Length: 369
Image (cartoon, rainbow, N blue to C red; front, top):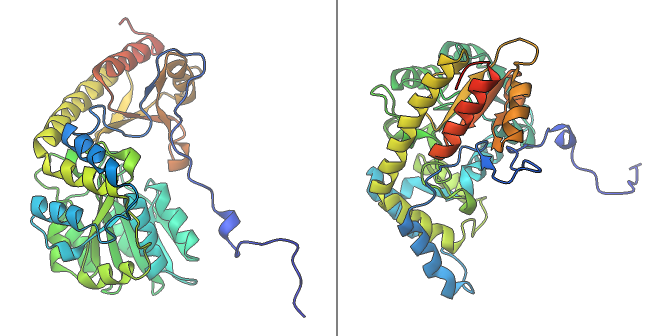
């Protein structure tokens, strides 16, 4: 006999999932606030993207192009890809979720790394599968640890490259070694949200590997270097069979028309992106040098943020620094959920914010500004 329930109940496991908590935005009582907690670009969006966004205003009564053809063709032109292998989503988060929805189920396992993006675990659990967490080495993805964790239940592996919140990266040779060591039916997801910022000769976002293998996909976003975080636009480059499978279950109009237009204009404006990348590279180097000079440890970063480690000393820990910085309007990201109880992640902000954080932490550490 079935038991009658008094209200709708989610399926087992859903209420055990810890919801994603974004970086804080507010500092009560502070007149000027600098949000440095969400890895947003201080340069904003390309003026061409803003113009394209506004141009759609007269046609808001019409559905958007459900295939995002204009955007897919723009991405393909810039990166030299076949548009048929590109799938666009409501942020790369949607694409990560679709991959789990399509390739995972009860009894399956998805491999993630100990400091990997928290959304991976959420989506694996949401699909009814089991997340398997492997250790990193020096805050960097460890290929050998991943391969050792593979079982007959493994169906997907998530790699953030560069990593968030670490800012470290895995070389293309190591990614190739990882792919070669995985069973052919396991999907390797290369999440390259910060690829535009990387300036290393041994790095490759994933295009080459996807092009030559049937089980690798690369996800990218317009929320970081392109400055379109408010519009939620992501894209995936993948084998045709995987694109086809995800297309069967994605929402038919998952991108809105202003987002499609703005993102297409943004990716065509590569001169603007180069300005953003140059500004970022300069300040990653300056911040790292300045913070290390006052006794703080900074994990070497190739992305648009730095991970700052604090002393295990009363009054000098990350929580103490966070309180001081917030009181002065500088909002950084606490990263306890990522396994760093005594660190803060700082997004590269405008020059006045970067200088302000340096000055505040110099005072915090007991040095002369």
